[in-house]
Image (tube, rainbow, N blue to C red):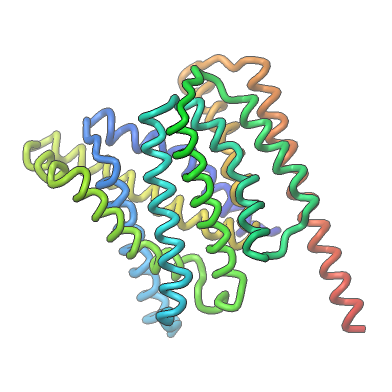
Amino acid sequence: RGPAVVFGVLCYIAALSTMKLTLKSVFVTHSFKFAKFVSATHFLSGAIAMLVILIYRWRAKGTAIPVPTWKEFGMMLVPVSLAITVSIGASNTALVFCSVAFTEIIGSTNCLVTIAVVLLLGMPFNLLLIIPAVLVAGGCIISTSGEINFSMVGVILCFTANIFRSGKVALQQKLMTGTTKDKFDPCALLFWTSVPCFLMMLGFSLATEGLEPCRHFGRLQGHQLVTLVQSLGICCVNATMLNLAQLFVTKDLGAVGSQLVAQAKSVLTVLGGMVVFGEQVTVIELVGFVVVLLGVYMFSRIEQQGKKDQAHLKAEMHK
């Protein structure tokens, strides 16, 4: 698909694999356990970074900053922003009711939920791609290790996160590949969704966390304050890279493809744990990882062949 797509996928996987580490630095190392406030800063940093890029393109290249119509904003951008906010809130809250391993198992079905959402929205989809999607979901479930703590509330929250996350990527694909594709590239789309996301998440933070995050900053002095701000800044940079790379991958590979790439990060995460922390990997986990990689490879080959067939049909129609 070219080096640009490969680079985007690598950036996406790298940002996904390091996101938990940067969050851990903020939540655990600095005891700044205000998830909604941190998420709001992620959206704010994304909006600021994309605005800088859009202004630069306007000043340097004369590319006008795209402005959505009220219909586009209300019917497409706000729903995407709401889906992002709800999916993050539901997935974070699910960890309170069930184990990380259980949330990983439910999260592994995200690519299958995305297929259902894409079909419900009437978007084009090659049904043969269901096979590699099932392989990836099954491989992730097999490779998940840890104590499985079941909770019905946790199940509902996990599936809520899956549904809204799937709706988010499907709508993003529709915006970047449909009738509005000339208006909303990844940078413009990230800016126009980050602003509502920031306002929504900031409202949730004020409603549940109050002003305690600000008071926490006020209690810190000197080196402690500097290191917390640095960790939060690194976390915001990572989140912005992740959100932007995800949009590029969604535009190039589609909603389902981006979800399969996201699931493949488990292999990189475990390999990193083996190298850095000397963690042991069981035979069952290795089998799961092989199944995940096989599913991703099959998806790539089937989709590539499908696009070749479409190009051939178009060529035949123009003869």
